[in-house]
Amino acid sequence: MRWRNVERAPLYNDVTTTPLPGRGYWLSCTDGVRIRAGVWADPRADGGAASDATPPGRAGVDAGALAKKTTDRGTADATGRGVPTDRGTVLLFPGRTEYVEKYGPAAAEFAAGGYATVAVDWRGQGLADRLGEDRGLGHVRAFADYQTDVRAVIELATQLDLPRPWFLLGHSMGGAIAFRALIEGLAPAAACLSAPMLGIRISAALRPIAWGIGWTSEYHAKMALSFAPGSRSESYVATAPFDDNMLTTDQAMYKYMRHQIAQHPDLALGGPSIGWVYTALRECRALERVESPAVPSLCFVGSREKIVDTAAIRRRAARWPEAELIEVPGGEHEVMMEAPTLRRMFFDRTLAHFDAHR
Figure 1 (tube, rainbow, N blue to C red):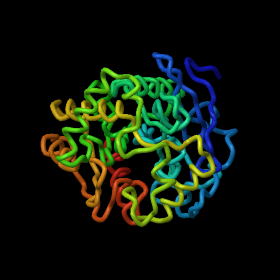
Figure 2: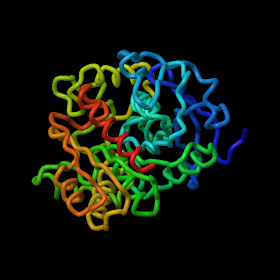
Figure 3: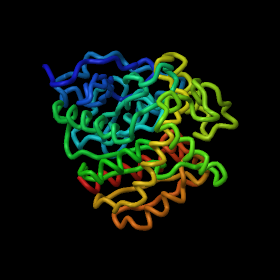
Figure 4: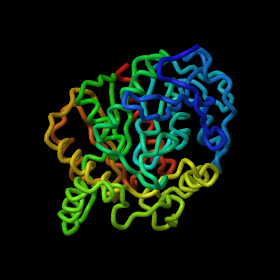
């Protein structure tokens, strides 16, 4: 089978715990940037495209706990047998620094519920085209460029005829991208946002400095492509000790993330560029001013969140009649990578939400 603007791409199943072998795709965006998507689906959903992928690995965590479960919706196992994913498809928009393989456990949860999953490496991260000379630099020219990536993902899901209805799940930066996509007309049956980046947590003293440096970088291309103050080329997960990390309280999941980038360093990404920070701040300010989309949504935020601005999330939830805000007690930024009881709550609530809007 041949697809328009789509080619086969690697997907590192050796570090991904999934109920089905995943399949990778290169997507050529309309502006010439190449991004990558990963699909976990019943092989029948895309003409057998996933059937020749290599089996998933244990990735340093309990594959039995993450990739095999029996629920009232059916059984998922690591071979892909008996895992129909015909109830719909989850369009999963990851956060900054993230990559397709990280969401193997999430794909396992959705497959157990009967849903296919497609995740994306945004431009500038994962195996997608990096946009600076230093591969560790997280850079994008403008936040609007991510919507070009969204359109490429939608085209892939359409060409593969992935099961409908479609649902949208965005985490952190991916939550901001998802929110913008909803405003601009993407119409999933329902949506879920995990710690959406509707604001960035910066101290009041440093915020005017960040705006000032960012504004200056608009006129100095080299400055825009420099690391933001305090950031560096090395991956946060690879360098930050578990005890002080801001992502998760679950040591096994932190080990899982570390294992992935240790095995495949080309997935790793360091700190953001000054240009990225400036365009992200501008996007957050713009999103604050728009009307809420008429899409039934859940919005999760950990009570120990330290990366995104929880006040901005609460302000949005207060004027979004279609959305329910759910605080995750004791949770940090990565709710989908949190302790088992918190992960279970997240996926049970999200699957019930999607089921209710099929």
